Image 1 (tube, rainbow, N blue to C red):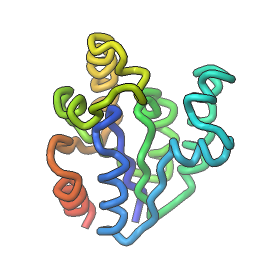
Image 2 (cartoon, one colour):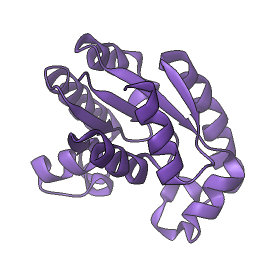
Image 3 (cartoon, rainbow, N blue to C red):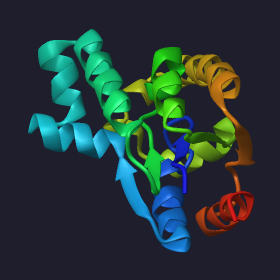
Image 4 (tube, rainbow, N blue to C red):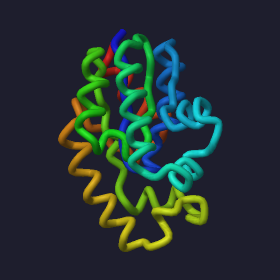
Length: 164
């Protein structure tokens, strides 16, 4: 099986759907944000604070290059990872297919709830503008678009049916 790569805005359900999908497909689940934190030994928020966004984006790119060699995996990407074409190109080199979990902004707001842990949601107007900007980028790199407003289980089943 080729890799199934999930992208979408924060709160779209990439991790929850990804874990469920990996169970259904009988394959490994990889969360890129978790992997970067594990490898760096600090939280992403701290990476941004100490080293800056460019350093973090370079870490993401290097990870994409490595992940292009993996097989039989469901990969949940960070919200900004696939807004960079170079990352999508690397992940597709391994014949991975990118699935965009297209959740509406209202549903994302409901899922996020308390926005204190989400710095990008401190200003709702800025968050909506970022959502709109990233949505266009996700659409540009995706092989499939799935309704991200449905339950994680239903989304995982829908995606699994594409790849059976």
